[in-house]
Length: 330
Image (cartoon, rainbow, N blue to C red; front, side, top):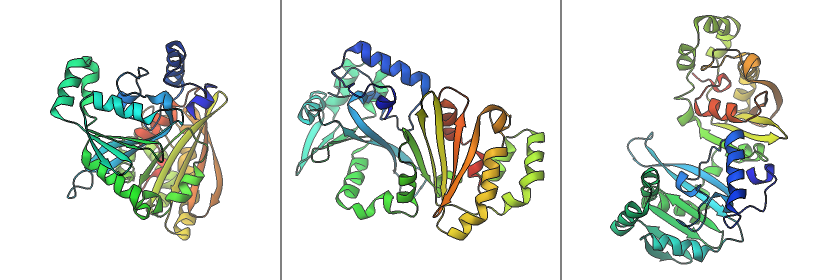
């Protein structure tokens, strides 16, 4: 999608370095992906892994539970769909050259870091790259679907492959996820987070405590009683795309109950239009964007946001800093 918006659909890892550099510079100036695709793979030099971000059709960054006792403990893994033009055997060859062990599971190749791979990366990497490379403890190549999985542990690879082989376990089957994905169709990048994760960051008390005293009073006077009645939601989605030179964002909340969604809708719309930024302490309408409530569909409440900022970084920073009253919860 980013290549399409940049009118560089044909760009790949074999393209001239000047074209790849121009693409990276343009993207750095306009928007930041919610899916970083593990930084070591974004490098336009394909010599290290046999592929890089210019060969991606799409990528998804997953937070994989890493501790069965602590639900907040996660590690990162990336699932990447490679272009049809990419030779997967070539990619696998480069992973092996870096010293990884190969194990076959049918047509799937699973690559695990070894002492040899760690020493090789240490010997051949620039100091700035070393930590990024050494975080890549495991890969998997799934040729039938042209997928590359890059993860911080073999355990994460196994967890993803279990879902791959048993689709009924997929996150997509949870309440609201499928509808949210359909709702986000057409965005360049999206962030989907379940309520359990997000409401730790969007607690009303936590958000209000970061506002200036006058801003707190203005919101409490206008919406205090309504905020106190907000219901829990099942999923928060935030995505954006570039419409010409103007970024457009979609912020959506999915519920497991139509009545809860209807109860909250007007309050959330007002929070998303009359709120204040936690970072700049100005009203959204004054400094960040204009909002348009989208017609409520099924179990989802949505705002469409247009930014005066010629880049989409305003939206990215708001989402990653949890600076958005629209998602407030009790």
